[in-house]
Length: 342
Image 1 (tube, rainbow, N blue to C red):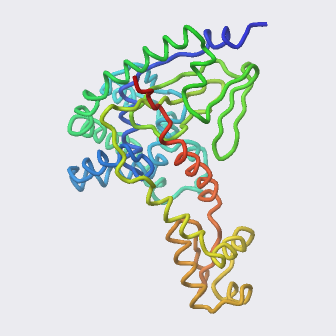
Image 2: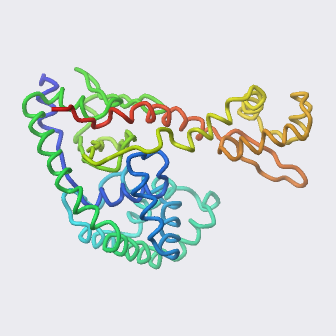
Image 3: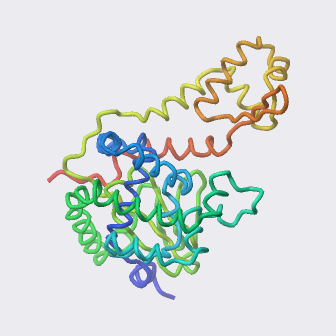
């Protein structure tokens, strides 16, 4: 039986991909609050982008789960070391089925009654929206991203060579340095996210590490067994963090910091209730309940659905699960990719 280091030497590869870096930058633009070292960059790009281009960016960000579907799925475009333009041309030649899966992720397999209005529109004019996306990616690259790629590319290529050198000396140690919540031992590969994902080595045929200057603090992994993708954060020498805590994390924690709101959230976790029913269940005044619901809704912790004269609220369980990830990412941030002083 081969050792872990022997298995890693056969199945692990390290690749710098300009197109993946472009897609990762779009994820940061879509939700910059957690990417503290890239917050200033994102704000600058958003200020300079035309309203129509920004609208297109938001549209495809919504459809692709904040651009994560392009990063988290099987490499249908064969990104590898492809130039940005070459990857876009490959996207144009994908079958409709593969393109839809690349864009929508697992939502591409839903039945028609589960589609959102935007997804329904895209499916009805798929050729148009594919062309719109490719045109957007060309413009974004040429007008905004190419200059940044020129700046960071040497650091990304250097990072690949450095981790390859470490890998040649001790593959297991090198892999365990990629991210604080990505750990390998003699038998398994573990990813500590909202849930702990554990894979046996025999389940995996390839493990690819992509460097990125945008990815922190995410442990972003494409867990499409048998091929797994992991991202390596590459810190830049001039990175600074002006705001120590993400604003959206503060908003959620503030919403949770009240005893009554926690009680309401727990009630709504198990069953949907309207304001009138919550008043009866908690003994709080209707106006007080309404105030608490607004705070919880603003933080994205609950969702409301109207039925006749009543709005019934339900806990957003995905948001609560994401909170575990956000807290992990917040505490990871100073250490991801941190270089030792020499």
